[in-house]
Image 1: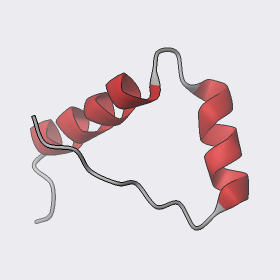
Image 2 (image 1 turned 180 degrees about the vertical axis):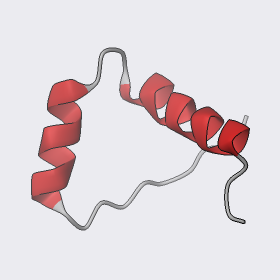
Image 3 (image 1 turned 120 degrees about the vertical axis):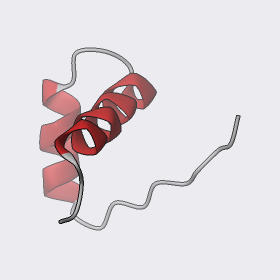
Length: 43
């Protein structure tokens, strides 16, 4: 397992994100990554 550091520059946006997550932070970020990969990412 690799560990990554997340830097968030927009504190207001970060606080809104924390309010809407349903599970722990790692799970939510992995779900976002998986969703982006399934959509094909950059085109």
